[in-house]
Length: 323
Length: 266
Image 1: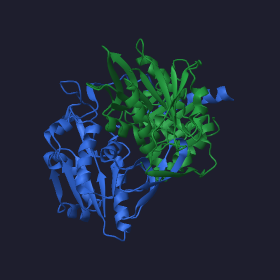
Image 2 (image 1 turned 90 degrees about the vertical axis):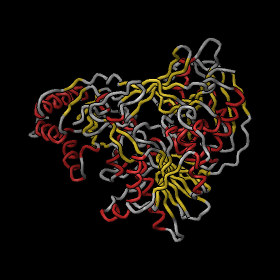
Image 3 (image 1 turned 45 degrees about the vertical axis):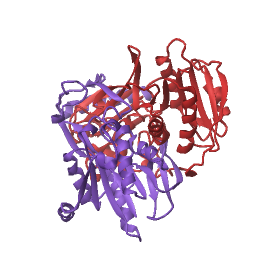
Image 4 (image 1 turned 120 degrees about the vertical axis):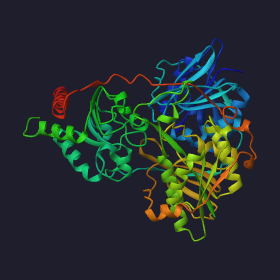
């Protein structure tokens, strides 16, 4: 068989949103006669069938596993068996914390062509070509997979839009091989809120990053945020250093700026994990001394300059009740 | 007891840079090299476990790369690794993470540690793949994105937290030996003291060849890789409108953007 196999990830009974985007990505690679199958794993995979019955899906393959949640040994055994049976040309998985735990192992064990954090895919003269970033996202890298009959690609979230129209795929049950998992999930833990800030609900955010240099400088940006009426957020290094609580971290492992409409990033370089939490905001203003910083790639307005000088001048603008 | 820490010498681009003549990578003259940021945390985690251990425990830093990689291995030795292993052969040039993992797995078999740490990803090419692919070649239990770890050398299991998306964590127990990929922020890496830097100069770096590991040229390089770079280029940078002028003028314009937003949302 040929065709495209999409792996839908779920957590605590809910499909991960990036899973649906893979269905759209699959349409870009589809050739005449190709089928798009979506595999979903879990102890009750059939519960996701209706949500996955979308335009462009020919088949939903349910793989019932003993583990309710993601487990690397389970995923590798089940998907390995499915790939060996179906022999798809392309397997698409989300570039996610869970796929970090199984995708490379699957590729290594089964001799698959392999690339991660892919944001563009196409066929050039029939050959699959994937594009990803390199050198801290400062360059783009086109990758191909000579001699590989199956290629596994982990796609970056938000690279494609999820399909909106529903479809009527057939549903197949695949018997996943039993696995003696070598790790065991004990529990999920929600990070306790260290303060009562709601980054997801904030409409106006001022975020600080590594560019602020040292902890003593946090105070002046907190005062600036108050002066301009913004919620103060931060990128990962600031939270890791303990300068601001983790609840103020915007990005993949922190909060998504869901309600935000104006986002000012000061001294934030724009690591891909940070962009994942804010690049959708309609008005982004980036202030950074490095004109090559990735944050300018998603910003509407850019200020190349010293963040301390700009911050001081901005505060002056809002002092004396001018706001 | 032994913990192996896989480290990588990463490369960042100089402000101005040029591509190689074949257009498939940057000219190495324009690369600035350093220890991968994630690996600083995984090394620190190993050293802390060793320092707290009742049983004598050795921390070994291992890297795949040519002679100049000794610089990052010396850094690891200065920060508390007991010894270092560097694996190189010209045939390894051009290896992707899968081929590098095959080499690392062979080195791990030779060292037989109780745990292997790798960074979640590297700051340069961010594949987030090498550690987990190494586990597959070893057929060892594995877990990615570990942000908190509880492990006593000699124990049959380790307990850790994985950092998932959106502030959610998972607590997991795993059988050892295992491969764990370590996330930023799991600890606060130490700085090497002048004294430890001096001491590091006397610690050994074993240089190991492919043949020493029982591998051949076809296992590595382009032949042993799961992907091949076709082309590298500078992407279209997006279309940020640059606000020009001095800080005062730039701030005035930014203030106007903020006031316009507030007017709209009022």
